[in-house]
Image (cartoon, rainbow, N blue to C red; front, top):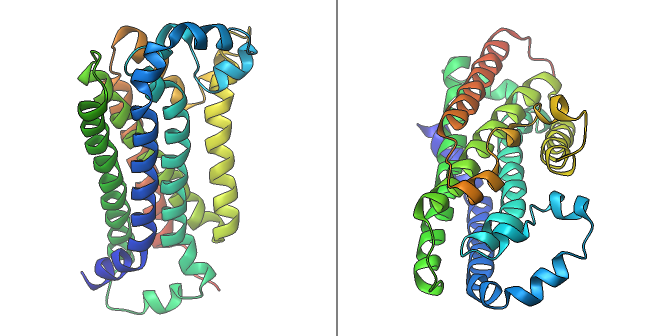
Length: 266
């Protein structure tokens, strides 16, 4: 419990900053939703002049952009996916690889805790932090839509946005945990994690509609939680979300097994 309290205390400032960032971005995108919907003729003409690759990269689809949920679900979710993936990766890297960088991992292991308990205490802190950020997004999303959006919107679609962000958080936290234990360097872990995040997101969006890229696109988790399909059809990809979370916990378990058996050398 002391370890959990310590980690929460050391990471609270970062969590608080991210809460402000997510809240401000929600306010900005949701606050403009009605304006964009009302002035759609002007924006449609502007968007149609943009290159298709650019529109795909930022999920900009004229068919869905001018719905009440459209602005948040297109441009807004592009930023949110990156923010949430970035936060989860950096938090996981800080808690695991940070121990190697700071030369504190040996000191940590001589305490009266098993390696398994140390690992899962850190995972517990990660999951609680990303759950808090998920709840902040979900709460502010529904509150701002209720306050600022007068046109009709679909609550299920709004929930899907938050669910997909939670999936992204858990997945990239598990990736960063595994990388941290394998490479033991926070800077390298962050670089690889961010590379995977950008590769998966932009590799999926930019190659949409390009021939012979379907197999390539399937390597991305974003392929299985398509935000455009959710906006167009109202489908929530619960099964895909559960499977990705399950895979993430397999990665956590694999990381834990490696952490228990590896020799710690600083």
